[in-house]
Length: 358
Image (tube, rainbow, N blue to C red):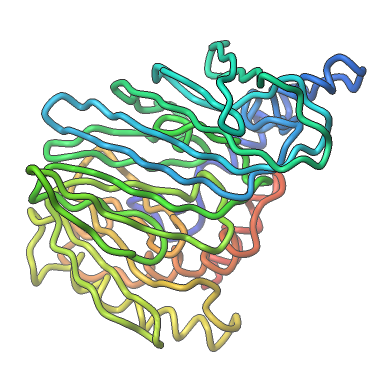
């Protein structure tokens, strides 16, 4: 990540993390038998207390969401495939501010309750250690952003013509239930249904879109395991350009309100060239697709290395000149930060160090 108005030297999150790390005690759950059966409600990372969960490891998310900008309402169905790393009588998922209608575990109705920003799931039967299981969650509501005076605005943000789900370290739990810590990476299949005429952009390879009854469903697949904070959803009026680069899909999108021949479009047009430059130094590009998204939404003051398709805030292109420096920074993160990724947030300086070098 890099902020507007600075050379790509990393984000203020590093300084904030150092302060938080000094002030916040580890919140890991004591390992007594009863609590182990319940699964930890925290990943135990002192930089992000309350985020992530214990007792299971996610392999895959399948997300089906529908969003209407007319009322900012999102409805979703998440299918999560995971393996229990301990015997579980219940477990937690991170989910902020949305209403859960029903939960099923392995097809059977499960109990569920909200405890702050945690969704507590109680299966009809306990899960044995090593058991592979699926969780289906139906949910809906008006997603809310995450505001921080230090880290900036993130999470799910309504815009004039759609929405943007973006942010570090918080964003994923504002639009789907998740084990929201980078130590638990998973693959993603995402279907996003929006009114006709709007684009719905995500991570990974495009796998088609269909229209019916005034709505269009866009489908994306990220087959390389991805940390949850690197998932993104961008909805709105965009000029979407598709093609291939090095035999892989290339999808770039520029907000329609930005000039077609302006600095944002010119910068993203060099994505393949910059990626090849980095591949000559860091090794083969690690994912199955390339791309980038340029926003017109003024509340986003940063760019983020969302996996395979970085998102760039508008401030990087206000000078009137292309900015290949920010493109190099965010693409370098595809190797360092995305492919080679965090086990704990205190290591983020390594991500930013490599990107700054690039």
